[in-house]
Length: 99
Image (cartoon, rainbow, N blue to C red; front, side, top):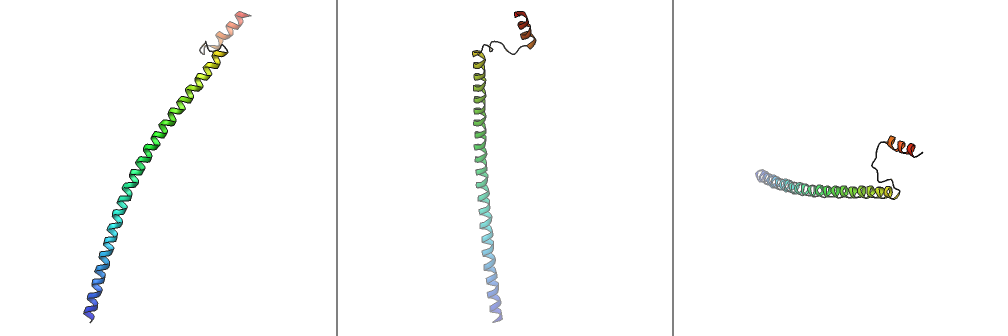
């Protein structure tokens, strides 16, 4: 009777160990798949971030150019856009000549 109990105990231990090993293997496979998917999602997110950054950069450049154009149009409207920024001393010399 003791021998039969011992055999049953060993068989139960082996069955439990097999189940444990199977569970561990499944967990490892699942972890690997999750890791792969996470890596793919991260890569996709980074690509989206890069595209967004590029688009924002382009819009910023467009706004800067539009602002520069508007500034130049205002200068032209007030007759100050014909000169580039020159030496302010020359502007003063012209004023002195006119007086």
